[in-house]
Image (cartoon, rainbow, N blue to C red; front, side, top):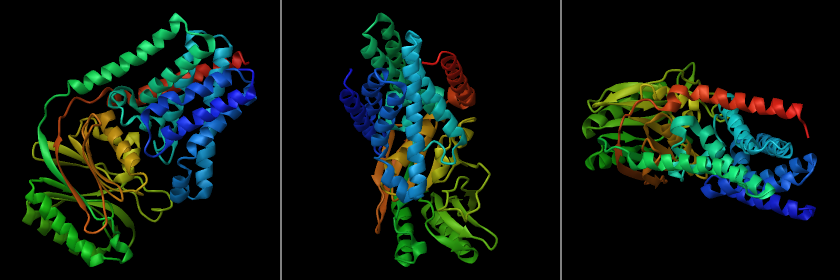
Length: 463
């Protein structure tokens, strides 16, 4: 691979594959394949060139999300996010190259996936955007793969995907050796165990839920009366189809204190008339603060819970006061957790409902259309990690129901007036707390410790 043009071409090929892996609706095989052309090219390059090739590949891939980040965070933050991710991939590739050229033998194949898993853990712990952008979410359509998250979190998913790519790339560089079969067998075994977990999932009690959304944001003053008339109609339609719980989206309206009281009373009367539990998202503007809340109203017409969103969208919700309390609600024999939209991108939030595990989390949401698949998948990942179903009613998104294994039970696009609704029977099996719920922080510390050891060793034997 003496010709630099070939190395650049391989980096571009990886970039194209990264483009499909990073996008908001990813193609899951691309994440397994994307690093493979890039790594041998980097192994044949100088250290500086290897970093440049990695930046090139990552830049091409990350460009798939640049318009989205510009829209949601502004051009400056969008560029910063993209550059930081490019630098991270340059770091992964340069360290993997150093390990291979130092002749570390089979352990060299573990450098890339370990660094990827450790970085993902650090970002999840420290980023104000939680786990958004994690490489693990590329695998949400690969159900056996994401079962790894119930044991080792999304970092475990990343490790397995990265280990496959790293092993194949090293085998291509050095030539296949018997030792290279061992990591691939490990990957196959882990995925096989995930498939078995899906196949032996127990038959469980179900609850019929309804979800409804009208995409019009009535606080903007357009179609206000029509939207307020439509939501009761949708609730009654879903109740007539046997729904026991109806979940509505986030911020149906922004209400001053007096109107919030009146609307609460209207929902209480609607719940009593329809005989259903209603979960509805609102913005309530008190004299001293503004809050993003969900009202939980029982079939007897009583407001049982007012859950306050804990994780606000930077800038867009900078004027809102975040909540601090986790809340659950007993409905029949099952316990349900409460969340609102962005709460679910934080692993620390998700695992609070995993021990003791709730049956499901009820999530009003509001997205940006283009990120509907990703937002729904992120919420579902929290369910896989911690063992509960996720019932998420998103505006400008999906009405989405997943079980504790991340399987999509029902899904439908939201819509503008007359809106959209969905009815679904949701399995509510409650298992013991998952391994990740019990030991997730410990596993995260182990990823970081292993990565630190790799970096210390490579510094002592720099190439």
